[in-house]
Length: 221
Image (cartoon, rainbow, N blue to C red):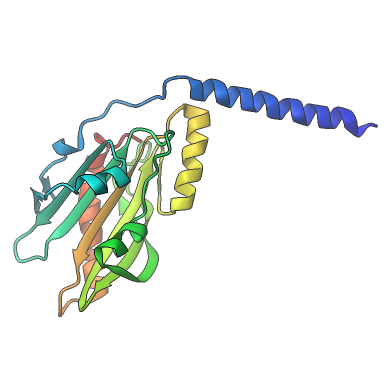
């Protein structure tokens, strides 16, 4: 019988927690002010950007993004770098960020090597110097062509590589901050003949280091 009060307290705490959650989700979600992605600089480090055609309406319906850019950045005597950023102002209405690992095979690209890498970047709020972020590192192939893909999920107060943890944090942020806004940032580089994967990866990291401090105005964290 002594355990009955304990069970009652646990049930009461769960009910109060659920009520608090429902009270939060019933309010209009907090969407922080930001600049549109179309205003992201066309000059990133030594690269100059060029806008690429938008995805088809069918693809955009699947992505369910509220804002996005698709660009290619060029530098003299260098292979081009592809950049995609897709921003979701909310993930509460059944919309979720799609992993590139799910989308690339539809375009004929197959993941050949999947892993992670760390990149020290400037621009993390509250950090005075460079802060290492972990991102996904994927080698994809189509026929004889090989590309390197670097991507991560960017949301309130954090940068994560894991799609799973990105979704977990989205739920926690909904409860704690009434926010579920987040973005996917993806960088793609071809691996030319005569260059090693490590050389291409270093080039990609250099681009990410130049890009990251510019994203804060467009992807608030």
